[in-house]
Amino acid sequence: MDQSTESFKETLNNGHRFPTLYVFKFIVKPDQVPEIENLFSKHEVVLKPSSKGKYVSTTIKIMASSSQEIIDYYKKTSKIEGIISL
Image 1 (tube, rainbow, N blue to C red):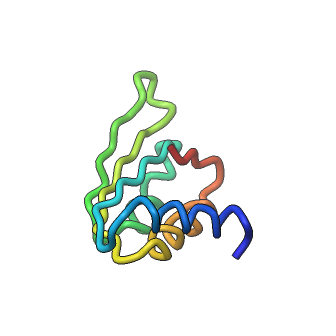
Image 2: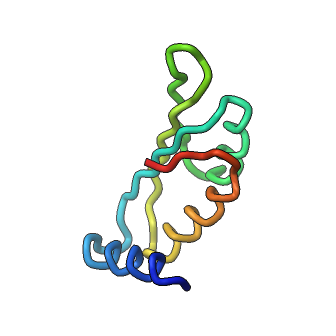
Image 3: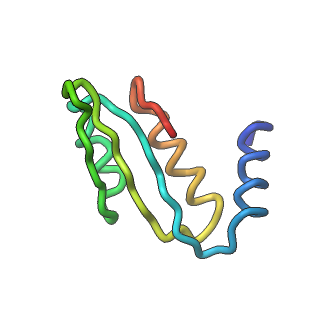
C-alpha cells in the first residue's frame, strides 16, 4: 500500500466507527454510468445529469464494514477513464 493510501486509511479509521454509512460521489460521462452501477450493484446509485447532459453526478451510499472496503471501491472506480471523485 502506498503512502497516500495508508494515510487515507488512517484518516478513515480516525474519523469513522465501523460499520458506518459512507457516501461516494463521482462525476462520469453518461456512457460510463453502467460501469458505476456494476461496481455498486448491491447499492442504490443516485444519478443527476448535468444541465447540458455531458456529465452525470453519481451518489452512492454504502454501509462500509471497514476502511479497507472503502479503499477497495476507490481502487475499482479509479480504473474508469476520466472519473472524478468528489
